[in-house]
Image (tube, rainbow, N blue to C red):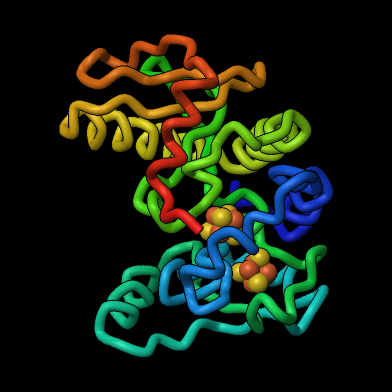
Length: 225
Ligand code: SF4
Ligand code: SF4
């Protein structure tokens, strides 16, 4: 069963907490992206929503519209979605953002639910292809517990509505382990317990607790300003 607009409305209600009440991360990455937050520019990230989520958004706001591809790569990305449950959309831009009408992807970026190899929903990992562009990925210690809790609960709601999403994120977690194993580099995850862990490369997904001083080294991955 696919999530209905009602499911997405309930998920939106659950996803209210900001990543951090202290930092406005959009102000951190925008100076390096022509003044616009990286995750709010389709040149970096084309928002993808399920048709049912789009239906909900259309019932609430006129902030969203179908995404119009501008080049061959974007046309291919949109073509890939044809016949699927999802579609590419775009909003009216960061200056016109309505916080209550952000998509699920907006509310969760740059995180996705991380599954261990035995299929346990452990916590949160980041979309690694945005390293160096997304300030949060390099400053992962700023993430606050209410955001972690809401991410876990909202995704459990999503998986209850459509178990295919669980499989999607299990595969995403496995891909991340594979990518970092090839680089022979550990990567951080935030446990649902609020603690930080390293996933070790070439280890079958073994995790060890991460020290704050080690995590602060990740800051070197974002340009100074
Ligand atoms: S989540 Fe990352 S990319 Fe998006 S606004 Fe914050 S720092 Fe920028
Ligand atoms: S809805 Fe808001 S948060 Fe989402 S992409 Fe648009 S400007 Fe960014």
